[in-house]
View 1 (cartoon, rainbow, N blue to C red):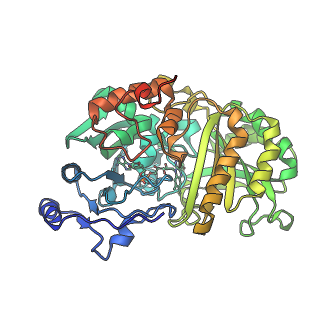
View 2 (view 1 turned 180 degrees about the horizontal axis):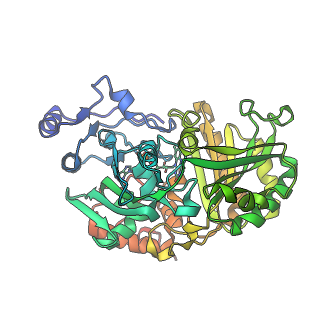
View 3 (view 1 turned 60 degrees about the vertical axis):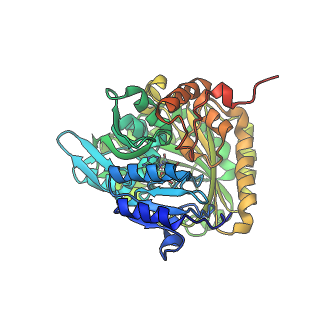
Length: 475
Ligand SMILES: Cc1cc2nc3c(=O)[nH]c(=O)nc-3n(C[C@H](O)[C@H](O)[C@H](O)COP(=O)(O)OP(=O)(O)OC[C@H]3O[C@@H](n4cnc5c(N)ncnc54)[C@H](O)[C@@H]3O)c2cc1C
């Protein structure tokens, strides 16, 4: 949907430009259309202004300006919000793309990522010292948005979520203060930053713990015709809950496209696959992954080692800016066998590129204390998600409906917790399902302390009013 064209009074803009050295971009500027573009082309936002602060003090200036002029403030780092949360019609975008950069301290095994840094910068800077931080799987995603929600990827079963490797965050709060938070500095706020962090301010720097790793990552994909889905799933389901931490794995249902090297007989048909990464010692790969090779003979398999940095950028083009995208997901401990056949039918009939994924959680993710962070659902065995990508705007509703239909098939399997970063629907009920009632009440109390006016509300929003007040009273 295209937002209406907004304007800001010239004197207000002049005042901002006098106190701000970074870019101030309005609809009158030639760069406006490029600057307002989001990764997800489903969302076409026309903000009144986009500002690009160069340091935390300019972030504070931007927040004050937005508040003084009653503008809805949105924050943008990598611009990859699947829900299109990085722009509002007539609002103010605080775009941190002029605050990129990552510095690594190899002695302390830490990285300092600026608020606008991208995952690829962190990967490259850490690998230069034989180190790694577990992040996501596409290099142009923002460190900020990913980390503030949790951070899931190829190494998390071994090293924990990105938030489990977060040592400190610096943020500018709604009243323009620069605050540092860690286990020992404003520890309550640090709890909330790890899973619901967009709610409390604009993060200007992240300190992350790194681990020795690399340079190679062993990986494999086993592809089966959908007719073998039950046997392939039995293998995955038996293996995943007891998998060694070094193995991350996904069970996927997809349609075989013409460009991915699938055998001719699979092209255009639904397939099931098991994809895995092994991040441990090369000598233990065979032993650790043997349990994945005990099922039906795959129609196609690709197995081998590649430099980790190549793997981390291998999907950057396929997931380039400009797709229309919609996604939903929730946690589960199992999937009922009868759901599999239905999922195959749903995937076969997807109006765009539609994928259903079952990601194994557990390992270091599951061993971290549930109460230690705002992220909810540590005990879950699987994350289930349906993901649609397409390019024709006429198919927007059909693709949204498709994602909801796919998730409805597995709704009876849902357990507590949803990963905020993989949810395109936004609203109070979604927020409640992400965190659960108890965590939401604790987050609401934090919100009253740090952002009582709900300045930062364009996100999976925790309303400052207590959870039981924001929901309709029963009876
Ligand atoms: C191609 C692609 C691949 C992905 N892969 C993964 C993956 O492997 N693992 C995973 O866990 N997730 C993944 N995601 C989801 C991703 O984590 C979220 O979309 C995330 O919000 C993106 O962060 P961003 O900074 O790029 O987004 P933005 O759109 O810039 O921001 C997203 C949200 O974070 C807030 N925000 C951004 N920066 C700040 C800041 N500095 N301070 C406070 N709030 C801020 C924004 O207000 C917004 O609500 C992927 C998404 C895409 C599009």
